[in-house]
Image 1 (cartoon, helix red, strand yellow):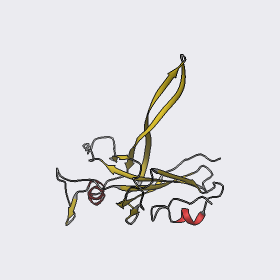
Image 2 (cartoon, helix red, strand yellow):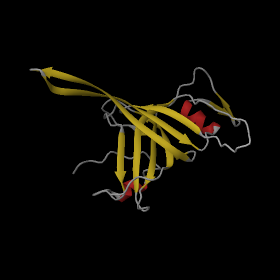
Image 3 (cartoon, helix red, strand yellow):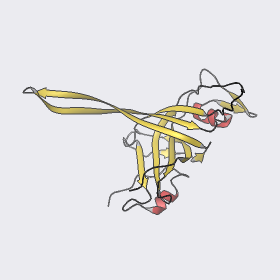
Image 4 (tube, one colour):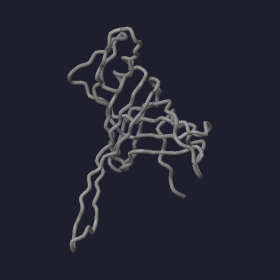
Length: 191
């Protein structure tokens, strides 16, 4: 099995409807800036239950997913979308009352065989305000990148939070992967 060696095509789609027990819908998936790195950290809590002086059971509860993405830049248009801010005549207007939209995030990661990919889609999350760092031009060239953070949670409609598929995986539908970065993938139905 090949290892992951790349990251590309980080794309976002607004989540428009997520009813309990209903059908979740999304807006159009769109690729934004070029990606450098992504870190996805699921969080859960666990408690050990003891009886007769031994651990009888470990009870785990899923909490949320921390996501941190480093991009080559973060344009005003991307910031406006991810933070719920306004963009008027090319000027980003950030307000204390901005509310980030719920979004899905998809990307793919090249494998070491350089022909196959892993596809990942996180289904429901909100991005935080972006921290900005600026450095002066000095003797040594130093480029700036942008890092954005988000918290993803399970969907209300079905409790799902992430989809993962490998192009070289057994039984993978190549047609489903072909549209992975242009629309939020649908949950496959078990035959």
